[in-house]
Amino acid sequence: MNAAARKIQRIFLTLTLGNTLAASFIWGINTLFLLDAGLSNLEAFAANAFFTAGMVLFEVPTGVVADGWGRRISFLLGTVTLAVSTYLYYVLWQLSAPFWAWAVVSVLLGLGFTFFSGAVEAWLVDALRFSGYEGGLEAVLGRGQMVSGGAMLVGSVAGGVIAQATNLGVPFLLRVGVLLAMFAVAFGLMRDVGFTPDRSARPLQASRAVLAASIENGLKNPPVRYVMLAAPFSAGVGIYVFYALQPYLLELFGDPRAYSVAGLAAAIVAGAEVVGGWLAPRIRGLVRKRTTVLVACSIMGALILVMLGFTRVFWVALVLLALWALVFSAGIPVRQAYLNDMIASKQRATVLSFDSLMGSSGGVVVQPVLGRAADVYGYAASLAISGVIELIAVPFLLASRRQHALADQTIASAGTPNTEPQPS
Image (cartoon, rainbow, N blue to C red; front, side):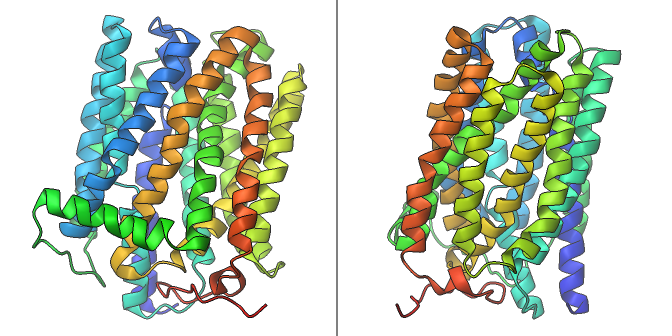
């Protein structure tokens, strides 16, 4: 890796570190925070569903911002939007606000995250290509996941401990402060390189163009299409499981106010993310096809969730949680690299945002359904059901494998789309 590429990587890792640290302050206690505000399980996960609905609703418009005004502008808008909406969450908690208010602010939170989805990853890949980087993307994306996991480990543990020492609202205020600091960091360090924003189109025309490009370069491209169609099941389950484990582990632990235990759960996921990011390029080197990793991770994750749903021992549940998180995390950089190697630079942010939209759409449906299952049958049963839902993603991943995309078998240089089929 040359000096220019190392600089790009450092900026990417810095932004990843700060953003994840800010977000993770509340990850270990978010469900407890909503329940403490007076919401039922169904309402709490419905609020999360409105968050993912906001991501679905705004993915295309914010994709216009990223491709039309620049990835840097998109990132800066994301930090401000998330800071404001997080503070509004804190206000709603203080007021014990009705559900409709949580739904509205949750949509705004989703808007904030859509400014990041696709834009940061697209910025990285295009900047690496511009700098002359020719290595595989798994290595850089894996390092990003390791940094993200480390930040999540610190933030989630700190959030749980601080909440137990003070109250559930303080971690939300900490998130606001770090997000504002990240605005200043990104304003000073981040520049669009290897990409020229197209500001010629009007917003409505640009939105239509982005949607058309997403369909043309995403859903109409068979190997990409099938990976995207798997996303609603795997992403929807992943979101639910992460937040459902907080009250479930407290239930097994026997102390509903042991918020540090909820932080421990998020910390285990964070540690697994670090290890998974380290393992991803090494696992990739052991197999011929990237889809082998994706299919194996999906099946193993589903089986672990079913087992998790049948355990009643706290420490066993922690071990299974760690295994699930490790399997889930190891597949993420491989999936990212697989998609990026099949997407041209001009449509990168657009298609990646559309992929995020597909995953979020699954969360809109899966979270309230599983939340209702938790109300009726308990958290254990809902986790077992989530494992069954995860398995639905496997046939789509196998369909992508059958397209024999070159990106499935080779490690292409950053930013170079590899969609040509291999000879049978």
